[in-house]
Length: 401
Image: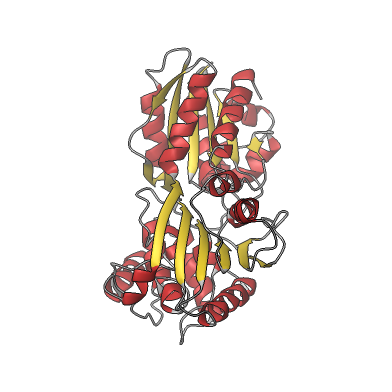
């Protein structure tokens, strides 16, 4: 990795750490000790540690997170690790345990819900009439179709027994939700498929998404709507988001004497279009300026696919356009994992593409086969930082060198 690549990676890591769940929860001095703590999502363990720092141990409740992300959980919580982005039976067991706990509470109980992205796949208990196999297949089909998180979670809300406001509906307890958003507009119904939030979409909306994407139509059930009285017992607060991640990155860039050039708006849409927009904007960068962007491109996978994720795919795609140019790109998932891999993303520059060819690798084949991980791993270009304790979509830093 070049010096500028190492510098950009360090800046990205500092920005991500500024969104760390433990720090964000622990610093909230207005919190009062709850009867239960439910911590759900990729940042669940860090957020739960923040609650333990604030209230002391042991806590009472449940912690549900992605496989490998339950690092040093607080004492007292029932800990579940489950499949993500593709759900599994462990997620079904976790969701059932959560719903059982919720049903056992009364109106004197107070729940602190610590919610972060990933909760949709982790709470894998489908509604009546839908099997876990159907749930898993539909989730996989949606992810590979290039559907946006808004579309995916609209469908999940109408399929999940603990999603789309149904968790709030299942209990008489009051709920204070602290949320790390991985959604561009911080829509409560979309983050984690809104387990305690009213749903403004309908079964007809979900069916239209499935039909347009060519995904099989399972039984669907309507979700609780805003007028449902269960939501009067819910308080909801976003404590970190893609925008705060981008702001933190710009602050880190400034702190080392560079000039941040913030890319507006937050990134969305097909990964090839996002890549082209980033590169077009970067052409006017002067030495000492850093393009800072955040968001969640979508990647439509077809044919027999290899391994990778949207950040890795975008990085490899960008390396082709950057060939021969003195620019470096960092593409990194803020949760520490990009797609179903152990890498958070990759660092590429104007020499990456030619380097691959020089060592007998064909980067175009890797792109065509959606196998960016294997090629970037061979080149030593992958970023591996492990679970980060947050989840605010992806961060992209691009600079001349």
